[in-house]
Image 1 (tube, rainbow, N blue to C red):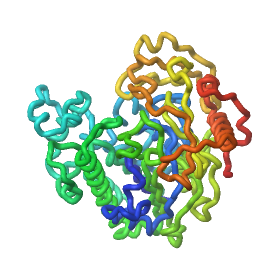
Image 2: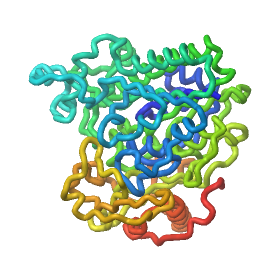
Image 3: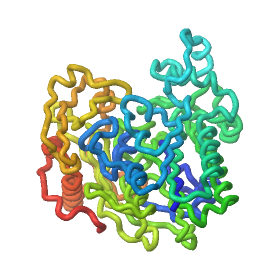
Image 4: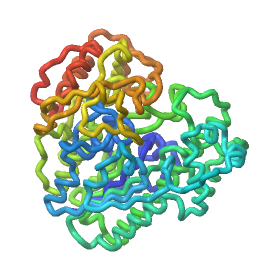
Length: 511
């Protein structure tokens, strides 16, 4: 078996024509949908970027135990299992977080990895005295006056032509791999794009096609906040996001062309998804992390094309699935046995017949709400006193995204003797999560609109009307509670959310 895994970042499901008939700029996603089975009820797990990838590598949720951090020594990751089974794995990515402190160990799990520079805040090009006055004239204040965004403004000085864009380079590298290795067997290729993650920077022809009635400086990078924007500014941000999605669509088309030309459909699986979505003004919010986890942020696309099921191309699946199901699916594709701690489920049976996978999907971010959906209803639950209730990091790798834990953070650390089953006997540090940490538990800000809420997604897909139903709320709380137990949530989290620990039963093997 051969597998190509295409992973995009911050892809809003409704920006794609297979999920939204009003979208016209993604013909190649529609083309993929004709080859693939399309999953309609697929959810993320741990947010944001690297926590989501740890879910994908291990088949387990990690946001209940850890903020953004490295792969742990006890994590058993699917590329390593593939290597043990003589399946070669290669990662091509412009996702620069892999090469930061908090991305330690991820790309090393693959047989080989190829890194393409220049995305977002990648510390790529040296410029001792950046031309800040010129930057302020060229870019909207939301882009130019945020100090953490300066590295990107420098990077853009060196991205002149379409071919220079990192995602274009990723695609060239992927095509080169397929040309050189497509005829071989037993390989796994992960092509990972940082796009359409902000900044929404695309070549001119994509921006011109999405042009709106905005005539100010470059505006392509929203803050994660409720923003005081004019109508034209909001339209410009959405148009620039659409331009990057259109560029992603063209890159996908080039890969599909190669599948056609090399006839890879006969013996190669193709999987495409994202880590999470993004809010583009829905519920007045932009971005991710700080706000309630509404559908555009957590309900994400998934396409799977398998050579043995080519006759299923164009079919849809309604069964509830989520990110952590990718790991066991990849293992199943390559006939590799699962390890016992995996809570994800292979999607191969569902690919064949829409077989139920799970009764619920748990999702969230470290230090924030815990959320659960059964596919029909979704429930958000927040701690009553987040700054006064206990919260700990469980790790052997005390690193934040771009720094180590400080001495002050480590002063309260204690070493526990294998406190969770997924530790495989490893001792584990329990470190109090401090508000003044280098990467605070709440992503450096305060969660807003932080209210427990229940929504009926069938009757209110836009989540405009939270419902009051005591019996249904109890059922969703019980579902949340049981799935926290399945994922071995630390005992203090139950008190934090006003819950009581329960017996997880036999896990979650369908409805």
